[in-house]
Image 1: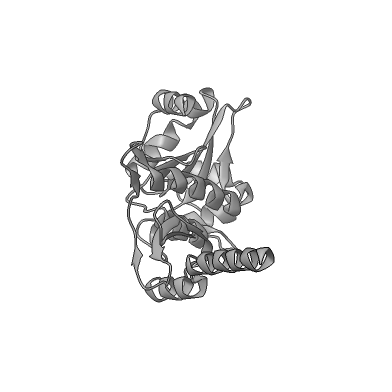
Image 2: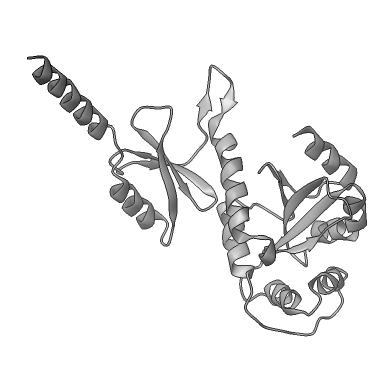
Amino acid sequence: MKKITQLLIFAAGVLMASSCMADEAAIKKALAEFIPGAQVDSIKATEIKGLYEVVAGGNIFYASEDGRYLLQGQLFDAVDKKNLTESKLADVRKLALDKVGEKNMIIFKPETSKHFVSVFTDIDCGYCRKLHSEIDQYLAQGITVRYLFFPRAGKGSESYTKAVSVWCAADKQKALTAAKKGESLESKSCDNPIDQHMQLGESFGMSGTPMIITEKGTVLPGYVPAAQLAKVLGSE
């Protein structure tokens, strides 16, 4: 009798667990229909019963366990006064940038680096040019600047072509600095990560350039002076 009771308890536990599991195939299908080509990285239960966190690229969606309902927005803990979505998005951004890798960025690094930021830049953007004109100030603050390209005019635009030429130059740093000054570049073409940069920027909810991502995954939209940025990074 004792063994039968134990088996019944075990069976009930299995049924309860299976009934609370997400239908991952259905969720992936639903997301793919809304965002063709979306790659789902993970599906996890949230703090709300029946609601699942879906990480896709640099973004977070929420789905019902059967995949029928999808939503995108901020999830807050009203008691602890925490933005649960933003704290997890920071980790998602860090992982996404790690996947791109520094080999696919143009990096300006000081002799002693205290912090690093990833900056989505448009060669022809005024504030992007202002930021780069002060690159020595960022380096003096011990900040490594890792550039990714986001030509706002889109693929095939003049800004996009300039980004490709910079990437394909023998000296990427020198070419980027020249382009930011408005100097003419030798037109070049090669395998490059520009499209990957743009897709990532879009998944991060890009609203303008420059967009700075701190080492903790926090988004700082727009130009931030070197001294101010050092304070922000030091307080994270």
